Structures are given as structure tokens and as C-alpha cells.
Length: 199
Image 1 (tube, helix red, strand yellow):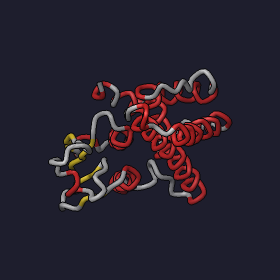
Image 2 (cartoon, helix red, strand yellow):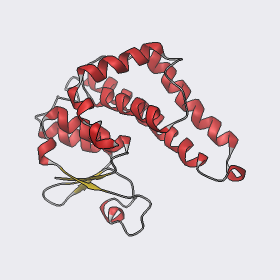
Image 3 (cartoon, rainbow, N blue to C red):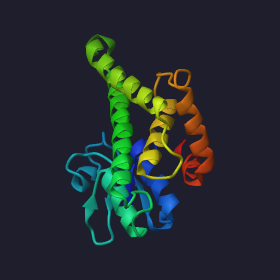
């Protein structure tokens, strides 16, 4: 299998963490992708031009990170990072959706702030920051469990991305979430194993 992603992409990191945790990392070849490079074949792999994209051994392309995690869980026998129990699975998928949504909003803030100041939309920025604040507040009120699943992997990658790329200071206002993040990172070798490769 081949994974097209960026080392700095939190969505690509989700896949790396899951692959490490499931013991599949040695079956995946990682190839850098550039969403802004019109010559990059990423657009042939995914018409949306987004990453990550996984190219399976039979040539099929699957995307996005949520679908790739489903596939990795299937390869590992199922029920490893996506619970077999339906209620637990719904909770896991909902947690993943919340963390993905915070990531999406944070990336929109990042891109908007790269525009010339005169072209930025303060209202747009505030809407995205509001999504981030509400999402983090919800997670702080009810921190996830420490089991490694698609939801908790995504939350951890999202928090790490906020630390690395965003001016938003989340740590001081979310002590319960901060404690969860520290405990999850310490208890999850697959999470710490992916840090060194990210610069």
C-alpha cells in the first residue's frame, strides 16, 4: 500500500498513528504529496486534490482519512480502532467527526490569515474560531476515554496540530482536556512514534 500525504498534515498523521497501533506500518510506503502543486499527481489520485490518499495493492484509491482508517481496521481484523458494538462505534465516529471539524476550522483560519490583511474576513475568522472554541469546550467538559480508537487518535492529532500551527492558546482554558492529552500521549506508543518524522 502507498500513502500520499504530507508529514505536516494532521489527517496524514491520523493514518500513521493508526497504522503503527495496528501493526501495519511496515506495509505502507509513504510518498509526499503537495496540494498546492498543480503538477503533483495527487489530483489523479483524488479528484478533490486533498490528502491523504491511500493507493491499495490492486490500484484502487481510497480517501479521506476516515475511510483509510476504516480500511486499516478491516485489515487488522476489525474492531480494533472502530468498535464492533454499534453504540460504541457511534460514539467513536462522533468523536472523530468533532475533532476533524475542529481541524477543518483551524486550517481555514490558518489559510485566511495567510491572505493580505486587507483581504481577510474578520467575520469568517470569528466563525471558524467559534467552532474551535465550542469544540474544545465540549471535549474539556467530557474528555474522551484513553482507549486507542479512531476518535481518540483524531483528538490527539488535532490537539498536537493546534500546538504546532495555530496561535490559539487552548491549554490554559481546558485543563481536563490537557490532562487527557498528556495521559493519552504517554499511554500510546503509536502517537509518540510518529512525532520524530514530522519536523
